[in-house]
Image (cartoon, rainbow, N blue to C red; front, side):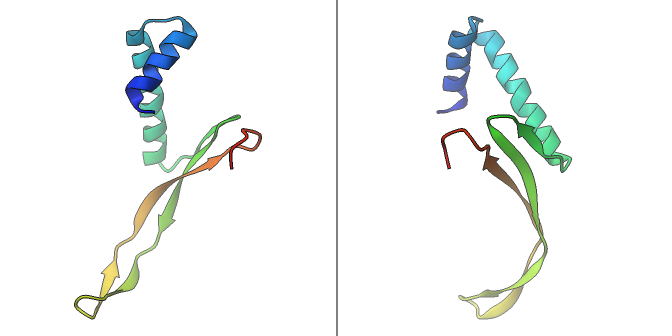
Length: 88
């Protein structure tokens, strides 16, 4: 499912126009991204939890050049599904 399909289904289920549903869906997604950018977890009951996992910088090995290189630190978005959703 992509964003447009989500908007269409949300509009149909809620009885509002696709334009209104699009504004709501976009606002929700923007709010989630904003929270994650601020290193804040986002938990939704009966859905799941979005959080940020930080990886420290570390040394790695480049097989092609056979040299040790530094892998920079990074942040990765993680999602853990809520219990009771029927998914694992």
